Length: 156
Ligand SMILES: Cc1cc2nc3c(=O)[nH]c(=O)nc-3n(C[C@H](O)[C@H](O)[C@H](O)COP(=O)(O)O)c2cc1C
Image (tube, rainbow, N blue to C red; front, side, top):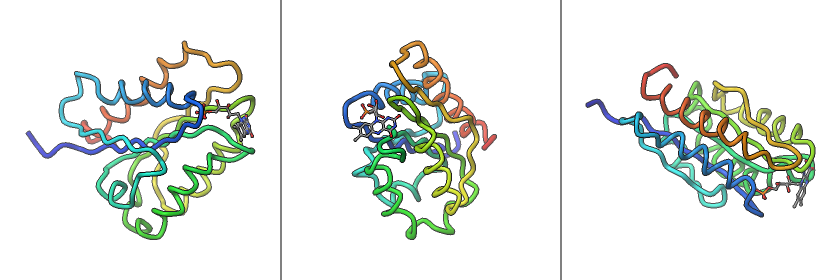
């Protein structure tokens, strides 16, 4: 078997709602049908530049706070930006966001920053805004699975 492809999932959740999305994403990425992908999960406050350099692809998750990504995900991007700049260009990423009623600021703030890192968004972001819709956790699971399957198949 070739060396495993590597997927890094970095997210933050203050009150647990984004965690529910993350758990579904992780479940999808760890699906039994995917045999040759190593999944590493990190809280945004703990993920390091080494984690980012290690991975072949990324999934980021955040709530929207004050019209922006969470401070924790911003702090992660602040810490990894220069150590990873010019080293991860072209790698795929996807994003999921939980918001009380909007979410657009979280989506746009992440997109803007990762543009500088030149990573490629390969799936539509998932936004769950308003009342938590557990039915949409299936989409989160699909997002995780599609990212892992795409890495494994060499599509990304
Ligand atoms: C400090 C703070 C600021 C927030 N600002 C926004 C906001 O700008 N837009 C929005 O839609 N929801 C906002 N919310 C609501 C959160 O996005 C929502 O409660 C989300 O479910 C929190 O995710 P978590 O449980 O993973 O921490 C805010 C919540 C907090 C605590």
